[in-house]
Length: 325
Image (cartoon, rainbow, N blue to C red; front, side, top):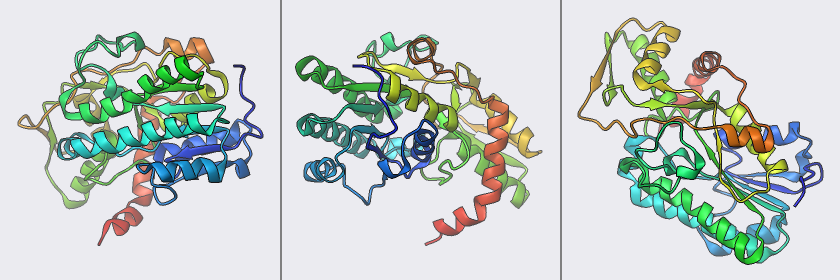
């Protein structure tokens, strides 16, 4: 299969009204896709957990390309509380979209978006795609990670059996303006930004954070992640999974200190070691994305953090108001 011409393709982006999805839809436009042919879907459009609804999606929208970003996801606390739900709903959404895409018969490409949580807990750093099946994921987010990883198994099986044109991408932790700042479901960067900002506003002399600060994480700006996804959509056709990342590593303690400095929080940071750390280390090997479809991240981490802090401060009044029952 050759490169796809996005200019006239009908493209469905599940989760297209969410954080990363909105960036992907914009990037599709930058890559030449017609705005009238890009359909961002929210959960209210089609219930992707229901087979009949997924079949209706293909029948109604007649997509040439499906980019599957929709997910039920949260931070460590949310994963601990909702493991069964996260496994079931993410598994069913991916399974039904791929199966109905196969049955639909006119799909030119399915782009499944996985998660770094799919990697084994003690994967050697940097994580290489060939290590994906070499152990069990970190326990707190294993249900979510395994559900997403099943898309890869299904895509590869369908490619062998029926030449189903699917690819599978593994983005590292994504951040940036427009991120989810809800304290019940946010990931680490928006969670820390909100904690420090509230501490500044209320005059708290200390902020308590989960774990001991030692785990490391890699982060990629949403603009970069979206560009990688769109490059793969247009140019990647192979069966191998591909990491999408920035090739950096920072400890949670270092991240907290950097954000405190950026936000001018002068209080103490206290670590609650009774809470889980999550996976000990995370950093991706990003060579495959560079070599196979020319992707490299370009936005520096310090720049991206400052941009995200500024966005939160400009939008927090609206966000907090929307959260109020």
